Image 1 (cartoon, rainbow, N blue to C red):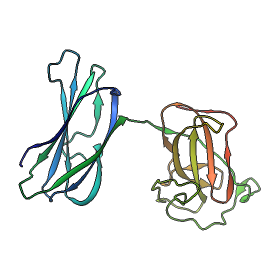
Image 2 (cartoon, one colour; image 1 turned 60 degrees about the vertical axis):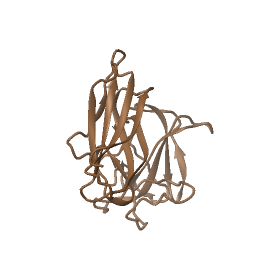
Image 3 (tube, rainbow, N blue to C red; image 1 turned 180 degrees about the vertical axis):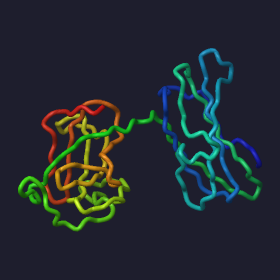
Image 4 (cartoon, rainbow, N blue to C red; image 1 turned 120 degrees about the vertical axis):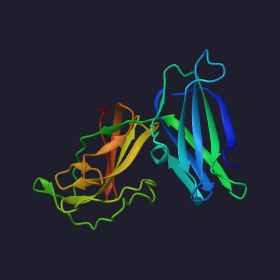
Length: 236
């Protein structure tokens, strides 16, 4: 109908305070159709309601489509959960829907927003190294090549900068430990310049989404053995 509730998640606990990321998958609808996602912050003494914030997403795809906060069309793009929140209600409503419309909602994601950290990473490839710099001898694919085994990395990094001083793609991985019991905190493909500097695929300084902390850095290259830092490196 025009404005009906699809579902309600009530009294959700264990909420990370501060800025959060949110995603939702939808399918169906027409060009004028939307869903509204309303977050209500419940304080200890709130009975039953607290402060609310609403996000509005267009839903007019015949395929499953993922929307995040940047896709909100009502001007709200940041979900900042206050420290006073002890529980959270999440309501999803139809908007502009009529009886002949079909909408499906699946797979919500809500988690503390991970900061983007700027890094200064540098590495040289032995096969390309000559007289203090590296010579380009490989043909670079436009999109990162680490989707295949053994890396199976799913990132969509694509070259959007000049490649005149670029040697090749590398894959950066941040681990919790140097032993076999490690946990992978973040992975990202970047471009390796001829002076050894790793940059983003758009030519900017390399960044990676990870919480501040100390991590072992692993660098993969498709024609060389991987290397790992001998100690945990601080990222902040």
